[in-house]
Image 1 (cartoon, rainbow, N blue to C red):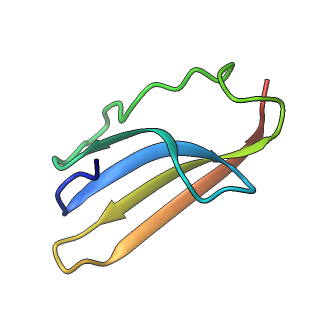
Image 2: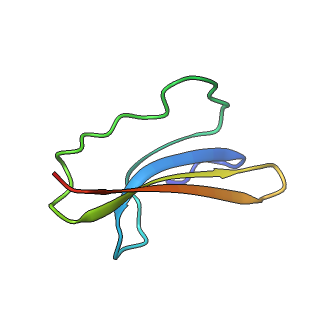
Length: 71
């Protein structure tokens, strides 16, 4: 279930898939804190992206991605 917006969502995905896996999400600001925990041994041995999405009150979405290869 998606967090009411504005808010943020953190998860990972296989580079061949748009669906986020195990997303952590929230609707409160996080300043110098932990957004979530990821066990890097869970994904298979494929290329993945860590994805952070944020949406503001006007509905604008920002997305940041960082790639890595599974264990």
